[in-house]
Amino acid sequence: MPTHCPECGWKYQREPGYFLGSIYFNYGVTAFLVTATYVPLFFVWEIPSRVLMPIMLAFCVLFPLWFFRYARALWMAWDYLADPPTSGDSTPSAGVTAHQPDAPTRK
Image (cartoon, rainbow, N blue to C red; front, side):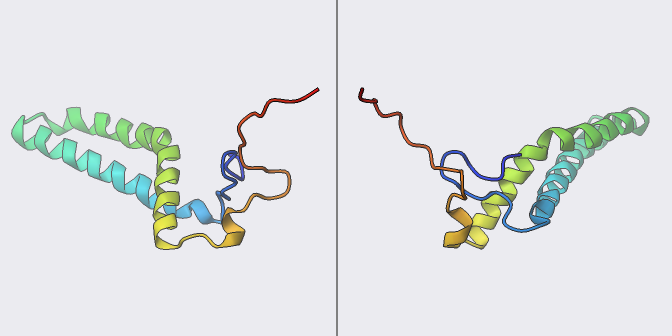
């Protein structure tokens, strides 16, 4: 994963262990989806647990792997709202420049 946004220079990882909070988003969305799916399938459509459990287990393993990037993005958005960046957090670091439109070159 890059350390800064190539467009604006936003520093993604503000401190060591920064993205540990994204685990809560990943777990929460996974648990919500499993619960919201399992309950109606089991109680309304009466699909037996022996059929649902392997499907839900596979979902609990595969979905977080796919949702990993989105959980990080949600965590960064949440952190941005809760703790807005200081000037040191969002300024481009050495060698990283904000995206500038291509200007015509003169010869």
